[in-house]
Length: 297
Image (cartoon, rainbow, N blue to C red; front, side, top):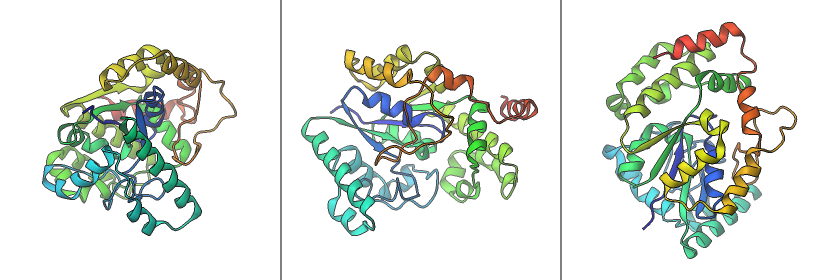
């Protein structure tokens, strides 16, 4: 059986873009953020029949009983219609149920594999590789571009959600470095600290293919050919055409975030090289220097 694929990395590190480009070859069924605790895109029992309690939910062998059966269903493209029907509350939920249920069913009939695009799986990427047999691709973005993106969106991170997961603290004690920033209003320092701790964890996880988002955006075709090879996907002329089109689309009015379709993904066609040139917008030279200092090895 061909393995499922997990694309992960911190939010705003290019996971949706990368996942969509991998799915362009037609061999994968794209599944958007099953571990996102916010509905949508998460809290969808048809896709993942498990209760997500934290952002960056930590999964390991010691709590796998609650997660392994659910994710085995997800990567096998077994959609839980009854569970989803009971959870539906809006017309959007109904439309999403039909879309995902049909995609899972068609995927199973045609022998496609699941592709999980989930930044919230980043700290559990090792478990996905060893227990679920996923081909894991972890995106790492330049820290200045990452922090600038979070600043433009007004995002922050609540470190208590990581620190109140004892198994995470046990297996990755560097998360304790985040404790002094609990309650801090310094969003730049918090984003930089999250980037540094996550990068340290990813560097030692087994079975993880860590990829620079910036290198991928600078030269998409050879980069994606490498990722196709790692994921066991077939590089076809159709995939190459689709990726070329999606990565050279003219840049429209400045937007830092956009929903597209029922998958609720932040992906949209873009000129990936141009996106790199404007990635640090919004940060002053002093803030850029500070981010570099805070994330230096």
